[in-house]
Amino acid sequence: MKFNSDNLKIAVQKKGRLAEPSRQILKSIGLDFEHYEGRLFSPCRNFPLDILFLRDDDIPEYVQDGVTDLGIVGLNVVQEKAAQVVELDSLGFGTCTLSIAVPRNSSFRSVYDLENKRIATSYPRVLKRFLEMKKIKARIIEISGSVEITPSLDVADAICDLVSTGSTLQINELEPIEIVLKSEAFLIANPQSLKDPKRQEMTERLRVRLQGNLRARRSKYVMMNAPNEALEEIRKILPGMKSPTVMPLAEEDMVAIHSVVPEDVFWDVMEKLRKTEASDILVVPIEKMVSE
Ligand code: PRT
Ligand code: ZN
Image (cartoon, rainbow, N blue to C red; front, side, top):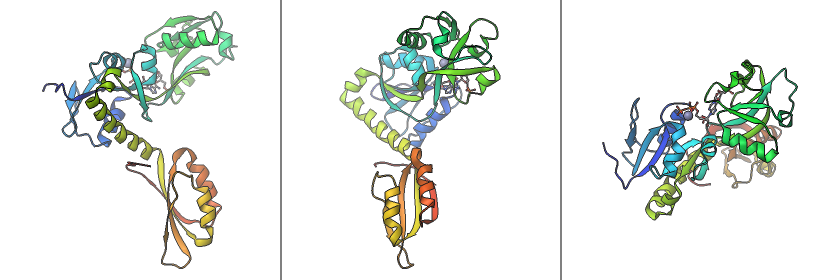
């Protein structure tokens, strides 16, 4: 199998936390490609796209150097590598924070208590920038893995590491005191590639599909029945993306109301709806949302 140089190229993580969700999201936008252990690249059968499977640390540079047009990688890695790439869209997975944490039994309460202290991290560049911004002088100790054990080994006084559930910190008796960076997986692009009309057009096609997938994942479809006179009140509760679909029911003076509700206000909307005369409230996931 050879690269087709006219094809768009995208780099995704080969193995690790972002590998499966990256492949999933590409499949969910209709791309048909093969993947198995050990495979380094796969052409798509139904889109002019080749997928490269790489270590996540290499992705920003591959994209910067134009080896691939696009990449899917954590914002934390993009920022640490300081690669010259365009951060196109966040993709709603791989969510974590790069946080400073200190031993639970220490006297450090804020990042300002770390003046002249040692902070171990695998993200020296991002941490350095953060400390400079806060005007804190601390010693950065660069460690490539298992950063969380450095305080107990007295290698460092604090750490700066990725946190998702927080259980690693807890097990190591550490507690977070400051968020340095909020991160998730991003679609990144080579700036020159975006200036080429053909490649830009293909990128846009992919982005429209990805955004549709993301919007769908971030929204729910809500259906309910209600008496006609409750319609105005219910309408006011439903978020104003679009007016809801209202259909008459066989039962007189009753209507069915359908609406898309974004996830971030979902529970708020549900709690308010339950106080109205709405009945038979059904919530279903949305498979795709092509336009709002
Ligand atoms: O082999 P390769 O270099 O490709 O992979 P990797 O081992 O460098 O990275 P990998 O697969 O571990 O992570 C890939 C990306 O996932 C990261 O760059 C982040 O963008 C994202 N991500 C999201 C995370 C986490 N959450 C996360 N929790 N990456 C790592 N962790 C680690 C963290 O370092 C700590 O050790 O998980 C531990 C903490 O987890 P909690 O749940 O206990 O808080
Ligand atoms: Zn890595």
